[in-house]
Image (tube, rainbow, N blue to C red; front, side, top):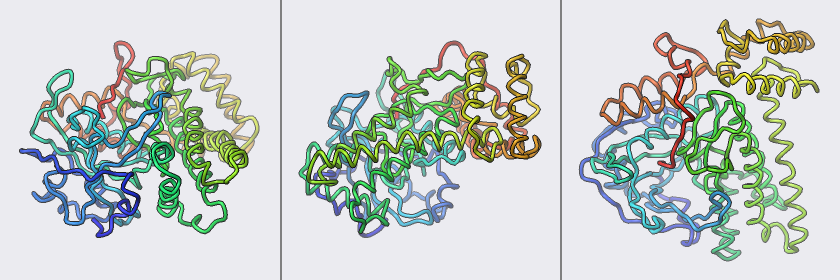
Length: 475
């Protein structure tokens, strides 16, 4: 950890120093060697007794920050005061991938625990590890998991579970909700301090720009448009897009009731608590815009002293979001069909395929993958598909692309293997019984989603499940 933890330079209202909540019998479940090497950290140094005690929250490096961050947020549209209720930011480190936060998740009570125990269970922490590795391999910006340790102590939920702590690595843990906290519970000087700190960390080229706060917001808009477009392209449903789960860095964070869609249905919801479908697959783009509007509101005092002019400036920036999202989404979907040159007819061609997939209850991932392989799928035998296929082939010919060349490029962007719900849960069932071999095999497969080893072929098959898959806010 660095000697000067930059978050501590912010006003003290943005964090609380938290005493450690030691556990008695910690043991390693996962050490992410691949992530360690990417960061320039020797993996062997993460497997020592000293490292175990740090990952368990039993002791800290001398220069550790050891703080819980303050934030607020709209949860399912309702504003509330929040904060790190079971997470401890232990500091930051300059790595080969830039400055990174290191945070313990499930490390015990903080001043923001709101009556909770501040702990986490093995299953949800391993779920976060698997999902974040899957997203990373699919080239989607995401927080990562450096380690998961078993605490050796029980946590009490609907049943007694084994406790665990995850070490999360992020470009920062600054959220839309951090700015909402500053606007609602702090003064304007504190808000300015937060905005300047965030710009210096994520958009330093804007530091000397005339209206850097509006420009900063525009950068966040672009990052979120790109992130959510990538979710839509891959069939990923976050599940809880509350404003406290939207990072300023544009990284995906918090993987509780999330999942990858099997059968294509725009109304798909996985969260047990999203009873009205607020965060359904088809709603993710517009919820992204709604969350960005909440961020824009927090920055108004910094953008212009006249509120009407501030509103006009920020509305213009917010209006960039739908266009940016649509462009990122269209560009990505073109690549999924092997199209390299933009043409006006492309949106219609894509929509026709998606409509057909919905009507035929086709598997989202396998349909796109199957377009570039010899995979046999029921949808490919239908009259409607064969007519669409002719239009697709004609469209490829307009840019002088051969079908073989298109298929080769498609196999680089259409995964064969995703973190399917069934296999995630299967891995967790084995892990909760003390067998981590399934998790290791599955993560190995997820890290090479565009190529399939013989021993991983079964992960391509969407199993027949009884009823819709439901996930819970365990992380």
